[in-house]
Length: 314
Image (cartoon, rainbow, N blue to C red; front, side, top):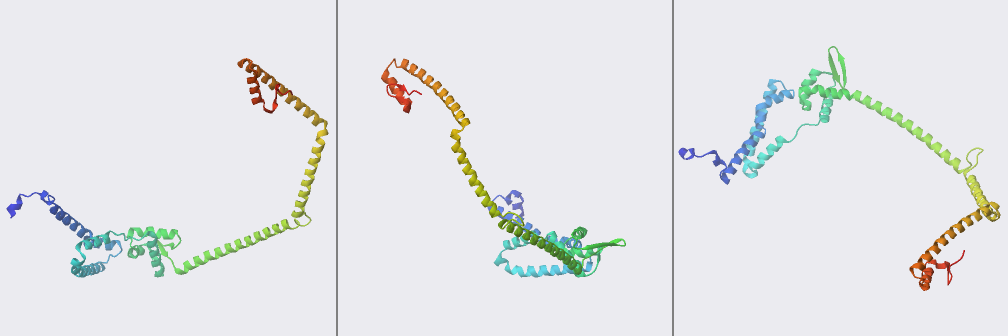
């Protein structure tokens, strides 16, 4: 049998459809078994525990031992459900569980750190926090100082330099005092705004009353001013009509009308001469045909036409 298969090449793996399916199953089975999390936990458990602040060897061994027991119990239990659920679903579920994001957002980590510091009811050095906080907020020791500085900048924890190092603390009583101070300041501002609003309303009401009544002490009311305005407007219209009645006998108005009439008459004479010139041209075109000429005159002169005479004299 060995001699029979010695002459086969690697291309036999994907030469037929069945072989291609088997080849894909082999590759994916190895991929899923490695990415399901077993190799990561087995090979790097020591590094992971150190990064989250668990450096004691006894504690690390205890965690590793419990982890192996849990793996044994889960593997023994799930082997009875392989035929019912299917290997594919197991592979996909385990891989999805490892690939799913598990990191908390920075705000949630800051909240965990702040809760830990307040619940401890004591002060801490930076070294103490670098040991304790990785297991509290799932951060590494290099990030502790960054998160502590952010909380200090926001005023949520206090820091004082005592001796050669900084001490950090945050008591619930200090938080309560800070909230009470903010609340007291907000109440004072609210009272100031309410008082200013009341004063403004009083001024508006006073101005409305002055407008609707007599306009204030010693003044004239709005209603009286409106009546006086209507009376003066009527008197003005009456005077304008009276002036129009005298305009016909005004020497200046008569002279202006005469000048306007002379201008209009001069323009009418000029256009009449133009019309006579056009009539002469028309007479030449029609070879002296009187009926045709009279028809054109009647059509274009309109009301200004006089039968058998032509254009009416000015």
